[in-house]
Length: 90
Image 1 (cartoon, rainbow, N blue to C red):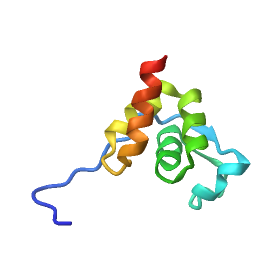
Image 2: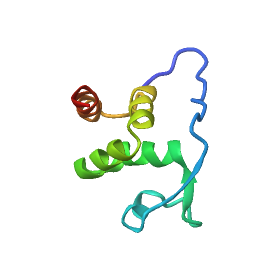
Image 3: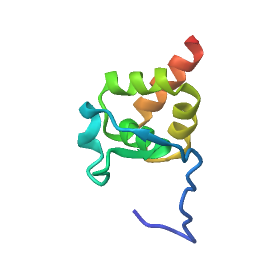
């Protein structure tokens, strides 16, 4: 993949720290202290998580999950589809 022009980092918006549940620690290999930023927490689950984990994170943080899913281009389109679908349901 070629990059044309200047590439800027995406700025973190949700900086509050959250506790990483024991069953999700496998996605946070770089957080040995057990806490991470909310945005990083949601992003890792959307990127690596199963369908049930993605649904769980959406139910827990609906507004933040929706925003993050469409903020990062590396999120798979199937994940974006389900998040849009769940948002319309509510």
